[in-house]
Image (cartoon, rainbow, N blue to C red; front, side, top):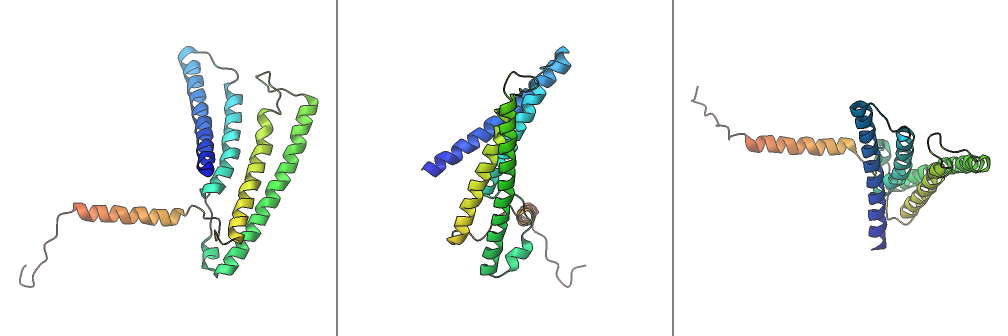
Length: 193
């Protein structure tokens, strides 16, 4: 129940970010081209919303297996080797996220110490840029969860979105639909010309 609630909250937050970004860009376009006026802070806020969407969405993508990956070779390996390579990949992802988390922490600390504000709004820059730390902490949590699932045999890999397999399924469905719509063909007899 808690897991479903967290998932719904994540999906709701991502949806709110996407809708907010879309509406803000729409309002800016209408104001600029319809009334020859603009919203001077719209571009900066849109970029910040996009950053939140991407960094927050990356951890959600790891959680649900929505990232695209090329794992054809790894799938051919024996089960234990596949699991080992997955754990190595998770470790590399954790190192990568750890480096970015460390750099983000230093960056935000300096932004807070200096007291720089956003260009168009009187908000300290470190507040909206905190998604750098939040996003990489969430990614680290997701990779740790994935690593634990692999270690405890609850998962055997990243479970990337397999576009090739999905495309083949869609092609098969389209072919079946097309064959179902065509009238039955007459079977010719040897004597018919």
